[in-house]
Amino acid sequence: MNEGPPPPYGLYLHLPFCRARCGYCDFAVVTDRDNAQEEYLSRLLNEIRFWGERIEREPGSLYFGGGTPSRLPLPHWQRLLEALQRWFAFTPEIEITAEGNPESLSDEVLKGWRALGINRISVGVQSFQDRFLSLLDRLHSREGALEALDRIRSARFKNWSLDLIYGLPGQSVADWRRDLAEALRLEPPHLSFYNLILHPNLPTTQKALAAHTPDHEEIQSEMFLSAVETLEQAGYSVYELSNAALPGGECRHNLLYWTGGEWIGMGMSGASRFGGEEFANPASWETYLNLWETVPSSPPIRARRPSRESALLDWVMLRLRTARGFHLRELEAALGHPPPEAFRSLLADLDRSGHLRSSGPKVALSPKGWLVHSEITTRILRVLAIE
Picture 1 (cartoon, helix red, strand yellow):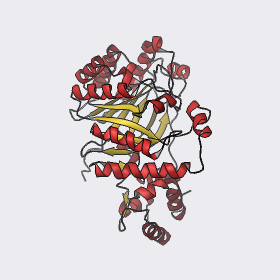
Picture 2 (cartoon, helix red, strand yellow):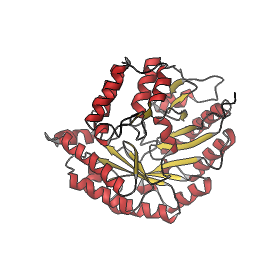
Picture 3 (spheres, rainbow, N blue to C red):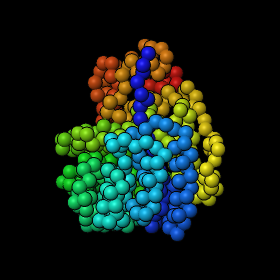
C-alpha cells in the first residue's frame, strides 16, 4: 500500500549573539563573542554537513532563532544558506524565518535577507511603550520598533510577525490593550503574545516580584482573554494559545512543535526530535564548540527514545495548546485502544464549565480552558492513566 511521502520536517539554527542580555531572557546567548562568530560558524557548518549527509527528505521549514540573528553579518548568512541549500534539498515553497530585533534590522540586512531567500521575519518588539521596554532591558525604543516594522513592509516582506509580552511589572490591562491596538494598526500577518515567565534570579523577575499584587493572576487572565477577543474581532485566528495569524499567516515551523512533527535543531542548545528519538546540543559555548570541532562519523550527542507515557503526555499537552485540539479517533490511535468512559465524563464536565470550544468528537480548549491548560492536561492524563 502506498502511504505517500513522509510529512516535511523542520530545521532550526541557533545564533546566540546578542549585544546585551535582556532582563527576562533565559535562552542560551552570548554577549561578548562577536569576535568569535567565525569559530561558531565553522561548527554550524560541520553540523549542517553531518545531518545533510544523513537526511534525504526535503525540509518544509527553516528557522533561525537566537540570540539576535539580525546581528550576524551578511557574509556569514550567505555561507550558512549556501551550505544549507547544498546539503538539504530546498523546495520553492520552504518557509525560511529569521528572528531580529528592531535596532539591528537595517535596510541593508533586510535587502540581504530577501536576496538570500529568507521569506519570513519575526521581530522581538515586546512592547510599544518605552517604560516597559526599559524595564525589560530592551535596546530599542517605541520609535525604533515602528521604524523597523516600516522598513520590513517597505522591503516587501509579505510574511512577518511581531512578539508582545504581557503580565509585566506595573502593566495595567489598559496598558496591554494599548500595545495590542498599536500592533493591530500595523496589520502584521502574524502576532505572538507571551505571558512574562519569571525565571529565577533574573533582573526582570526581581522587579516583577517587587511589584506583585494580590490580584496579579486575575489581571493576567483578563489580559489574555482581552487579547484573544481583540485579535479575533480584528480577523485573526488565535490558532495556538500564544499565537495568532491572519488567514495563511500561521508559522509552519512552530506548528511542527505542537502537532507531533519532526525537526533537527543545530547550534548551542539546539534540540531535536527525529526518527522517534530526542536529543539536544549542549547550551555551553565551549562544550558546543568542542563537540562539533570536526564532522563526526556518528552522532556526538546521546539520543533518547521517549517512553510511551512521556510521548502520550506530550501528545495531549501540545495539541491542547492549539485551537484545533485533537479528534477522538486520533487519541484512540495514539493510545492503541478507546479512551475509558471516565474520559468522556471528564469531557462532559469541561464542556458544561465552558472550558471546551465544542462538544462532540473534537477536543479543543476554549480561551477559558487555555487559562488553565496545565490543570486540564493533568486531569485528562490522570483519567487516561498517563502520569
